[in-house]
Length: 227
Image (tube, rainbow, N blue to C red; front, top):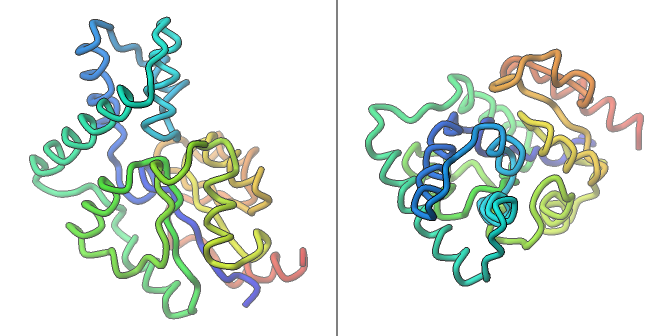
C-alpha cells in the first residue's frame, strides 16, 4: 500500500476531554488571579500543546513567564487531568475506535499519535483503556518546542517512522491540527467529533462523522496517484 501510516490527534479524536482541559486551564488561571475566558481558550489552547496554550494565554494577559514556571504549571495541569479522569464513571472514547485501530493493524499500517497533549496524560489514558499496544509511535506536546499549527510535530513523526509525508494520513478534529498536517504536506481527514462536517470540509481532503467512514483503500488509491 502507498498508505503506510495513520496519524491521530488525541484530544477530540481519541478522547472527548476538551471540557476537562478547559476546566483545568481555568483553574490555573484562577490560581494566577485571572479569570478564564471561553473565546481566549479557543484561540490559544484548542488543538495546541499545554505549553503553547499557557504561554500564550498568559502573555495575552501581559505575563511573560520563564520556562521553569511554565513547567510547574504544566505539571499541575497533568496532575489535575489524572484526578479528573479517575473521577469519571467511563472514559469517553469513540465507540468504533478499537475497531478502526484493529483494521489498520490488519492492513499493516503504522499507527501514531501526534498531539499537543503531554506524554504522561496520553500514556495514562492509553494504558487505562488498554489501547497502548496499538500505537507504534507517540509524538507528544512535550517532545517539541513547536506546537501545532506548526508542522514540526508531524514532520517528526514521519522522520521517526522513516516515511514520506505522501505515505501518511492525518486524522484531526480542529483547524489548528488540520493546518499543521497540511503544512507538513500530509493529507488529512477531518472527523466531526467537535465541529460539524461543513466547518471541516473546506479545510480537509476528506470529512467523516466516524472512523469507520474512512475508506482506507480509497485513500491509498489517491496517495498512489499523487505519488
